[in-house]
Image (cartoon, rainbow, N blue to C red):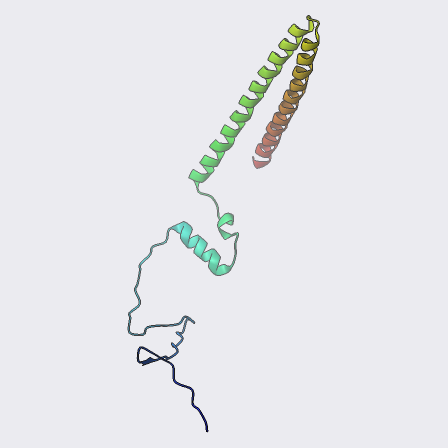
Length: 149
């Protein structure tokens, strides 16, 4: 005796596998019209879309920047230079103040003063290292500007 498997039915409907569309996506309901949405792309979006189509991931980066972006980048670099100069001046002032404090303390003779001088000397070394670093940054910036010109 042979037993046939029951047919699968959900809510009195038989299950039919959906047909594949020509794009490879499954159409689940043929009787529902697909909704359409109209989208407009900016020039940047079109460029990125073109990059996606060409599989050139650096496409957008290779495109020339517009004048507004170039002006903004130049202003940012100028501001950065001003920031470095301000930091250099601030560190130089701190170095001068620290040296004056050390000089004032050297006339006194006690263990507490000796400890304070050691702390101030360590601070002076740190400030000098910061000043060297800032000057190196300023030099690198000048080299980049010279290479860019």
